[in-house]
Amino acid sequence: MPDKVDLRCLTWEKLERFVVDLGWKRYRAMQIWQWVWARNAADIAAMTDLSLDDRERLSAVAFIDRPRMADVRVSSDGTTKFLLELKDGELVETVLIPSDAPQRAGDLAVRMTQCVSTQVGCPMGCTFCSTGRLGFRRNMTMGEILGQVQAARAYLNDTRPEHPIVRNLVYMGMGEPLLNLGPVLDSLRTLEHPRGLAFSPRRVTVSTCGIEKGMREFGESGLAFLAVSLHAPNQELREKLMPRAAAWPLDDLVSALESYPLKTRERITLEYLVIAGLNDQPVHVRQLARICSRLKAKLNLIPCNPTPDTPYRAPSPEELLRFEKALWQKGITAIVRKSKGQDIEAACGQLRAAHMSAQ
Image (cartoon, rainbow, N blue to C red; front, side):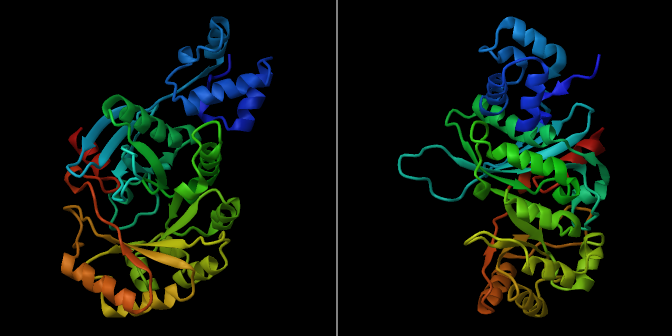
């Protein structure tokens, strides 16, 4: 008998074909789809609007593979980090970050942003990143990518009586999304389906180091906003911080971003890790100004969250403010992104690294 199918790995079109191949009416696909994505069912037995015979028949050929919680850490600031174990024993991380934005009047639910992973490990080898130092294991499937969202929803439903809402998603966890483009695009299409998770593309951002192949295809899909991990305003420094990403020269990357397809009022986000004394000097402000003058973009400043085995240093509040003000004076829309979860190893790859070293 052929291997069973993980229902979370079927796009809407594939699920329809799967149901028809079973000899069922097409409406069964919508029933199954809503159980998997809208109702967050953990197994086929929960699909009570299918008859017992139909559930048994479906269980003979399919399953729902929810990742196992290997570890959960909750920060004093409300950030929650999960270490999830996949079916083959590999470990990935996902993080829930509470919003600092005020809620609407009468809305008591806390709104969360979730950072999700797209690969087990990462092949890019960025020198400031714990995930990069752990190396690359494999790509994640569509079901594994979205399984992180399902796991977080189940956790919040079970543990938080105020029922926080995961409002925004950022593909900015472990891995380089554009090196796993097919499953990433499938997951984005599944996210926006109105009878499932129903995420607006305006609530989803995909962050990339800058991968030449796939960027245009991703942009033309219109499925999410683009964020680019810049971190260095010149090629020499980029080669030091991001040696593999720098294989695509910085000037060529910026040229590609100049022609990147954007919707009305949409801007590219440039992510910039501020490392004290290394990329936050006046010369770097001038170089960033030249880059930003070519693009319809905003600059997110992320204070470095160094691990003990890196030579990099976080900027002091005074250094960060000085750098931010210098960028403003150059007409750059620069916003400091508050660092959260430092007491629970919330930076990318830290919890997985700690877990692996303890084994």
